[in-house]
Image (cartoon, rainbow, N blue to C red; front, side, top):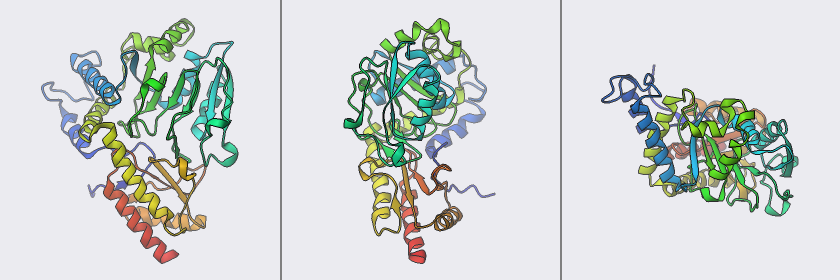
Length: 364
């Protein structure tokens, strides 16, 4: 069987940096100085406590996280956060505002409504989420418990370039663009992200929560299932139960790789360059058609269509055969989607652009 790596354009779990995979391979049998696999070490051991602390320190340094925020390592993905956010932060007599800019925001709204009162501040669902809601469209609730947004939409290929201006605590699902560019944590009250796009493998979710929201969550601790309480997780330094030890270790390796690439500014420059190469080809002749409004285009998930679904199926099949994998659009919308997360190599974008030119030459 060939061990040659192909180009993985999948929306997640996503491509990981090759140096990280090589380090994992070396440590898989026995961590240096420990004598057992990273898969085997106890989460109560000094070794893992050191890994956890170092991973958190690197996350804090990369994002310049202020001291009045806690970093939690959790399980359940962003989908569990759709429930945990309102369970911890939305009181019985309160309303939470949600900005409905994509399919994942719609899922977050659905879960929040099971917990309490939700106001959809704006929605572009009627436009198939081809753009993000504008600031002027937001109908925000005075005294809202929080405002929830999704910073990047993997399915529709849109991404916020500027944060919405809100008075209530801002909660953001940043799963698909976290650490792909600088983030101003101080503008947020809570940020959460499944790691499997830009930060590591599937299995761990990063939650960054401000102390005042943690205090609010603590008042509801007794009424929540233990594992659904931010306060419990914070009190136990993310070690109330066995955390996803391997995934945390891998996130730590990825954070060191990100630092070596110039940190978040370096990642942003790299990701912008990759995305612009692909968008330039999409816009070149009209044979390919981008689906997101240009002002809202994502650097992470680039979505486009062709004249017919049959042509798109041929494109995906031929691309896969050429070693360009994972280009199918999400099953709910179809089309083509190229995900260019942090570790996706620039030469992969060049290979896709060359393939697109040749495909158009033969089919245009």
